[in-house]
Length: 114
Length: 110
Image 1 (cartoon, rainbow over the protein chains, first blue to last red):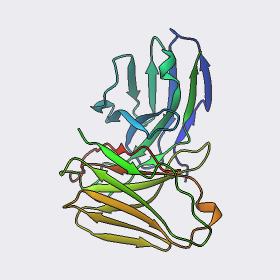
Image 2: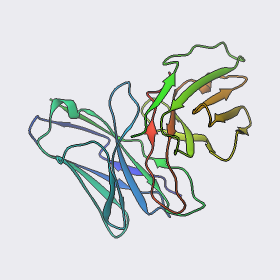
Image 3: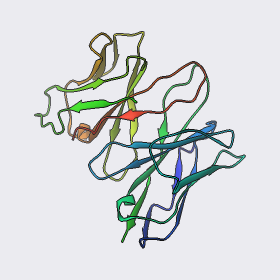
Image 4: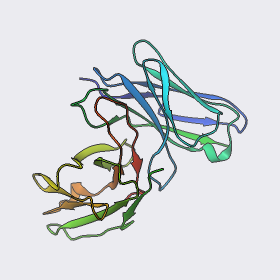
């Protein structure tokens, strides 16, 4: 049973560019959440997608946007990259079910903005 | 919004000893408290969780306790082994039935 798959694993971009990160959720999961983890910090919630709609959003600017496809996979897009956007971006999948608890995280995409 | 404080930021224990990590949360409506272990180059992995209707939960060498009145919860690891070395994160969430929920994380303990 495949877990959460993220691509690419590493990425280097120049300030001002745009980037797209991809995530395939764990089999059977229907919700995808994205988190940003700066070096030495805990993950911070960016947003969450369910049924192809953004359901919740954290304190991130509109430069951060996303999408969820009918097969539950998801993308995170960041426009006009800043040096401060350098971080590990984690995708987590979960199931909207009364009896289901817990996220499954992927290994992340390490984004470096230079 | 929810704020989660985690202590200590670093912890060193001798093999075989016990380790305790403590977290406090601010939102009294939070009702789900997972703990994650993150090894180098990997994403966080759920190791144990507790819901607000339970005071303590154990899974082999790992236990979590919750004090709703004081709004704090703790992770206890007994008989520590070298493979327990990692960064540990606590988190809090308001989980309501079959709904989506987000996690607010502490800053981690190495």
